[in-house]
Image 1 (cartoon, rainbow, N blue to C red):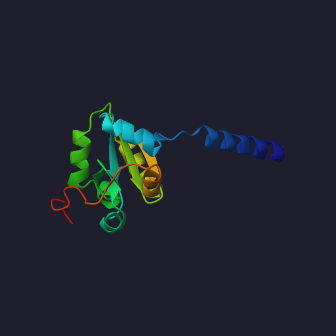
Image 2 (cartoon, one colour):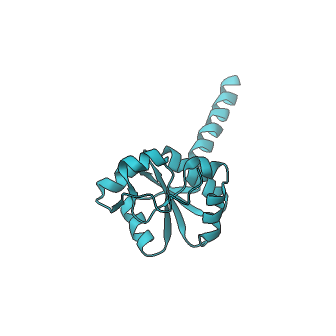
Image 3 (cartoon, rainbow, N blue to C red):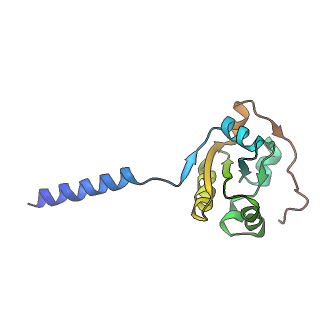
Length: 141
């Protein structure tokens, strides 16, 4: 009897894990670049300023560090107010972990969100890179 109960509990656990879907999709940098170019997406770099100064950032991307997203800073709220509900918010960082956190926050706010992974994926796809942080003088530190 105990084995049956444990088996049923285990089955529920496995089914629960398998059916859980994330509101965040993954997207290739190439797809994101096309959507950005056509106004269907806003690409957001969530890395720290020092990282961007070393490597540059995706051309056309917005820069809002993850810490500002997590604390609902004015820059984040302004971006959400500006993004149209039919646009996708696509995030990237160095490897994809911080991008996932940011995308989940955007999805929880009702936006369509995607994780692009890491900046190296963007560069390796041969997509354009900007060397300067857009609006960096206006960014509050």
